[in-house]
Length: 424
Image 1: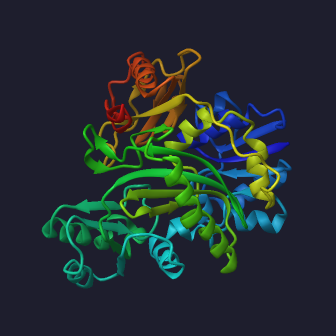
Image 2: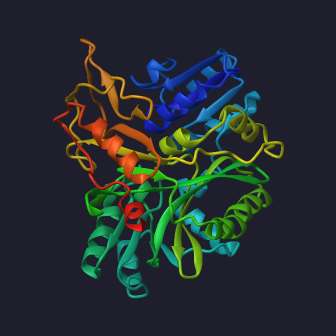
C-alpha cells in the first residue's frame, strides 16, 4: 500500500511511527512532516490546509489511503476532495467535521438528539453575551465557536473575568474562530477523552486517555492544546465506557448518518464523568494531541487495517482493538512563552538519542537549521512518552529521559499523571 499522512505535529509523528510498522505499507509519505517524522518516512512540503495540493499529491503517488492528522485539513475539505478522486480517506468530510469546527453546530446537534451535554447559549454580540451571564452560574465556561488550536476555552471564576473573556474573544482574539462564542453551564466532575473508529454507520471504541490542558503544575495558568496525557485513564471504568458508548458515541454516528453527513474517521469524545453519568464536553474530529501519542504506543496491533476500514466505510469485520496492559505517559516540552507568545529558534540537544525500549520522543514543533542542529519551531515542541507497569514507573522513565535533553529554551509540567497517582 501507498499511504499519505497529512500533518506535522506530535500526533502525526506518532501515527507515522505506528503506520511505518505495518507490513502492509510499501510507501509512506508525510506532508509536510517534521524532522522527527523524516527519520521514519519520506516527507514532502505540502501544507496541511492545502486541500488541492494534498489531493494532487495523493493522486500522483497513487495513494491507497490518506490519513488526516490535523483539524485544519478536515475543515479545508480534504476528505471531500479525495472522495471525488475515489481515494479512501481516514477523516470526515468538512460537513461532518463541524462536530469540531463549530461548537455551535455541535451543541445544537447534541441538543436536537438528546445526547447528554451541558446547557448552553450562542452569542455574536458582546452585550448579548454579557447579559447571558445572568442565566448561568459561576464558574462560567466560555468557548470560541471555531477552531482555536485548543486554546479557545476559558473558565472564568467570576462575572468580571467572564465579561473580559467575552470582550477578548468577540474582539478578535481568535479571528474568525471567535466571531461567535458559546457560553456553557459548568459541569462538575472529572474529564477524560474517549476515542472511537467510525465508518459512517457504526463506531468501534478505541481506548481512552486523560490530558492536562493548563500550562503549569497544579492545573494552573492558561489553557493550552495539551501539556501531557496518559492512558489508560482510571476515570474510564467499564460502566462509564459502556454508558458513553450507548448514550453518546453510537447515537452520534447514527444521527450524523441520518442527517446526511456520515462520519468516517476517529471521533474524539471529550467527556465529563458527572453524578448523572458521562456528558459531552466537546467533540474533536481527529485523534487528540497528545492523546494520540499514548494510544499509538499502547495499541498492540497493526493500525493500518483499522484506518483503512474506516476510510472504506466498513469496520464490521474488525476485531476489537487490543491494547497493552502497561500505562503510557506523554510529557509535552513547550517553548518558553507558550501558549501566548512561544519563543522560536532555540537550540535543542539530545532529543534524537536512543532512550531505550520504553521511551519514544515524538517531534511536535521542530525544524533543522542549515547546520543540522535541531531547534524549536512552534509552541509545543517535543513529546516525551514512556511506558511502565504503572503510572509511577512510566512517569519515572519519562522524566528521566527529559533530564537527558538539553533545551534551556523550553519548559514542561512536572506533575503529569497526578490524578492517576492520587488514585493509587
